[in-house]
Image 1 (cartoon, rainbow, N blue to C red):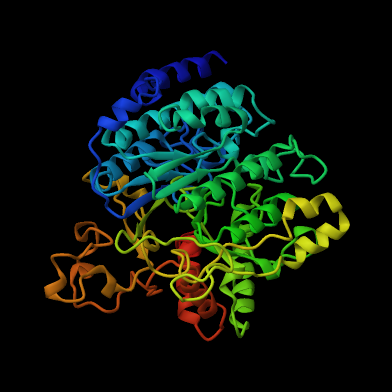
Image 2 (cartoon, rainbow, N blue to C red):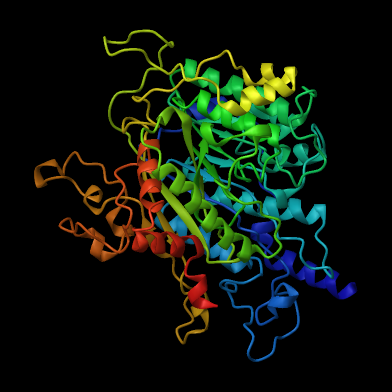
Length: 566
């Protein structure tokens, strides 16, 4: 025990810069107002699941969580920046290297940062049990680093609470209070009271135009037995209170003509969320489809997307095998293999629908993790449209510019009617008599101002290359991007002066800097944007067995070539 205490003291001294508590200053609206506005870049960063581990030791055994013991010669040893495709968490050398790389290459190129949780190590070592104090210290370390890299440049950071950042009891409590202190620089002052109650908040990332909503998915998560799971007879359940708050937020942002990104840690699948929580999430997502630009999550540590589909939710909110599998951190790789088959099954169902009603869908993007457990370190850069006229939501049934009604009179999905029949209280929760705010002209459905255009995913394929003779740290490289290569460049030489590059050419491989390139190994999807119709088009292609090469690429991106490595 004494040795452990001495080791921890050494770590605290060694990493005093990253462990130092962030300077907490009162919210100063005058100071914020005086800050010169940054020019919009039309990009943002999504970063998730860093899992820093202060006990990580180079050269130790993977079976000890890379904390002690040297492995047998044939077994992999803990490298300086982590073990690729392993079971260990991130050494600080990896998290610092990642954020230093992003600072150098991207911090001046993004408008805001979505940071979807799990900033503490896993509690996977019985000899070194994780403590609540350690969780706060690790989150404090990561917050300080995020402040230095982004907030110092005026780039907003939107954090969310992960399941390894503490399983949440109903608030307000010490956990919500601690994070309100740790994240005080990120949470707007008007949101402090709400955050201290439930650990969620909203913030304008482009004032008056685009907002981000940070959800506390611990109140929806099936592994959190400390909450009731949005039970319909308990309006004071923390999950229900959060959904009530979310509904008000979405309605307020819609009335202001704003667009919204929703971010959280655990993805909103029927297997991850309590049934009533899942139904409420799907219903709100589709009811405010014309206001929500997209849904961004982490937790699964595997790259994939899935749909929130009104037609596929059946009795008690249980979906077909159409979405993310539950992550219980036991035999993770096997579960991820099952996820691939589950997604293809869902995509195959989509491919058989003759007349797709886009009103019935929303898209969830789940990003891979920084921690190389069980794959490789990664992060995403999203690009979005900063040109054109803003979408103006209209009242349902109102004729706008002679083009017909804005919005949809789509009926409630069957699941809501079924649940309502089972429990009259739930009928009120689902708002079955209301209308869905959806429109083919909204940014989530048609490429316009604020629409997501695509993303580039960067990863570290040579994580174990730190033992090379030059002793240089491994490099982040482009893994793939969703864009068609032609969209990375202006359509003609004459249009070059007014063209907004979705990605800086200097951060792309040389082959993609050539404007004549029309095909690339980095761009297998060739998507023109990330609107709902574009995602459904990709899903329909993946759902057909004849597209074997496309499926192989999709699988490789999910697992980052893990089957080929180990």
